[in-house]
Amino acid sequence: MTSDGYFENTLPNLSLTNSALSDKKGEGDKAIWAAVQAWMEGQVAPADFAAWVMPLNFLKKDGGRVVLAVPTMFMQDWVKKHYRDPIAEGWRHVTGKDVAVDFDVVPVWQSMGRDGGGATEVLGGTQGGPKDKSEVSNGGATGGAAATAKTHDWLAGNELDARYSFDSFVTGKSNQFAFAAAQRVAEEMGSFNPFFLHGGVGLGKTHLMQAVGHALKARNPDVVIQYLSAEQFLYTFIRAIREKNTLAFKELFRAVDVLMIDDIQFIAGKESTQEEFFHTFNTLVSLGKQVILTADKSPHDLPNIEDRLRSRLGSGLAIEVHAPDVETRQAILEQKAASMDLELPHDVSVYLATNIASNVRELEGALNRLAAFSRLTGQELTIAFAKDQLRDLLRVQTKVVGMDDIQKQVAEYFKIRVADLHAPRRDRAVARPRQVAMYLCKQLTSRSYPDIGRAFGGRDHTTVMHACQQIVNLLERDARLVEDVKLLEQMLTAR
Image (tube, rainbow, N blue to C red):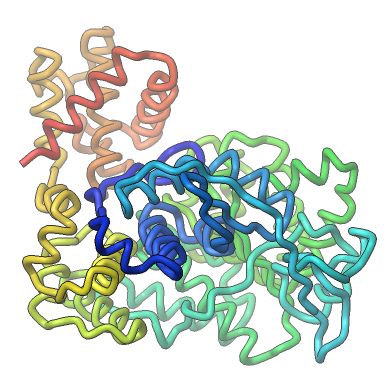
């Protein structure tokens, strides 16, 4: 994953023939944009996709220039900086052609008031609406209090995704405990505070979190829910400071009944943001409000988080969401296909579920791409078609890397013994390879910091966390180390 929240591509070049595209001219460019969005859904974290990619609409294509519509100037600035290149890459993967990507602000006025009343919000339209931004209400918080709040449009979070409900969540042995706990939170708000879901990328944490929100709204339509990513929380806080309007920021986040933040690990190392979140958290919990968070690690394992905040994050219920087994993966595919009105042959479903074992996001992303290109090219969904379109992804998935494999490869690469990685030696000739091996164990396996520590001579989990962070820091400035790590990853993941 890059620093912009965008995942490095692991999919094949899904290009269409010129004849297939020419037949689609007129509505073809919009169809291409839909396919690009489908491609990007598998590359971007769910909260970021919902916040920054899904709201983009195709506006026009002028020669080699594609123009997309964005609802606000703030969003225009953000997507230009962080998503212009990924979008261009997606267009190239779909069409095989390079394009320049631009964004135009196209506002739309939407009433956000309860029962048809309340303030209006600038989300996009070209006519009408309030003259003063102070009259604009928050679009990410849902409920009466949010509708009447006087805030800036850049304070808005995200609407809950209607697809993410308890009914649409497929349960199995890997996630049934997390599912049951989420239902309990929905039935009795504040029963676990905070409710902290953690686990790898694309395993259903965001789905469960938003399912709680939908269930709470169904029970009480007036409940005020604010849902956003930690990245949005950070940049909204920075914007509030710049515009000298931190009071509006504080009032917005402390007036909600339920605060949901995705990928809370993003505020690691951000001291001022952690300070503000700590006080917001304490205020909400003291008032009996519900806080729901997701992260890639447990509160105990999150690096660069202040101790007092780490303690608060772990004071409720923290549950790990594990990768689904093959039966659950097949059920997920079949449910996804039904929701898309897609006829998915049973043998293709079994093949995908068996060969894509990493996470739900890649599983659904693969199905999205197969569906998009099957419809655009008119080809039948078969195992051969799936193998051809997803060959790079399927090749990566077939290689399972263990910690023993990593230790052996690293020892061989740096010309040391595996026993040296376990020993207490601290000289640079051994210490750096050991740090690299620990980093690769965290990147290429699903093992926890304590598990990795035990595999390296019984070291403490904090030693492993420090080692991983040390390599992350060095990779930003040490070109030789970048090359070493890249080569090791290739050797470990190759067939």
